[in-house]
Image (tube, rainbow over all chains, first blue to last red; front, side, top):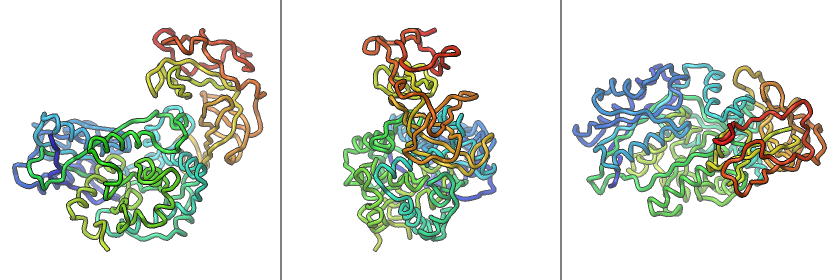
Length: 356
Length: 150
């Protein structure tokens, strides 16, 4: 059974006045209406959101979105895997199709993060950390700062040079009409931006954002369709400081990548474009190593050499990544898939990788 | 003294309360540490969650005898490599103090004699603890009881 991505929808990211369920419906409608024919109405719905109740004050999200899309009669579920929620919802949708339980599944994911203050949003997001870390006042940026520091010190890398990740991703998001941050930044601006959680500065950190995305999945009937070759997912011990330190990185990413590569029966060298989770600039470097594109400690040099640029050997985050697009936590994983889908179709416009 | 959960199967050490190893589901024993150790990472947060106020600081401490903990430093932000000790304070929070702590001889792990055989180990099965102070009663037990530990 081969699963195809029939169509996609993606709202602009940023501070949006709409309610979360309306953002989700906007993206879902785009995916339904841009499908190959009117027969592409879904027979199942998966809705992803990380913290809809706390950040947007809304529960029972799946039926609410179904209502808005005129899909109240189809089975609908909500999926949540923290910052990977969008990807998790996609994976569930793909399995629903692959299992032949459903012919067409609409996957929508989104987050509304700007209705609450920065402190409130930060506090809500921190609840996904281990209780032991929350007890000590940890936040997502704080834990990211600690992991980043361990990574940088392990390989003797200067944080000042990591600014290049932001500079390059922002150069890409300048071409992304749906990105929250479309202005260019310099290395000096990154390194002078205010400290959020040392050594991470404001411009090392993806922005709090609103947005939603959607994909329509179906059994593949046309060889020209973009199909899902491999999927991988893994979780990790919640207590971050308990995780093994060698190599510094994320075992969940490494396990998930191995699963996806094995299922697709391809190696990392056959990957032609990648969207990776750069919620924090050093994480892009760690991801590149965990995904096997670079050896341990080599990703910064690899990046500085331009190998991940849109015209490099492996374009990385040509959409601008989370650092440029913004990071509505529940949709970022799905937005990455949508951006890659557009790349594979050659429909990424000015963001198209491989252009001279 | 700091109590860590330790997996009899995969050797993961952690602080979080757990009935089984979060890594592999294996049975747990517990290990005591004096709290002495070395900072391996530190951060200062500009927007901490309530009820903390800025600037809020956190450190990751590599404990003598093995294991890592997250703690709040009592003073200025320490740098990586700085030595000191972690103590358990109010509400079970861990506080880091530079240059403080008990003699290093207490850093030896307390291992269960059944480590290589038992499926589940009760707290009472723990061997004697060298150097760990039990004055004032038993140490706080963070590990929830396993199936046989009730």
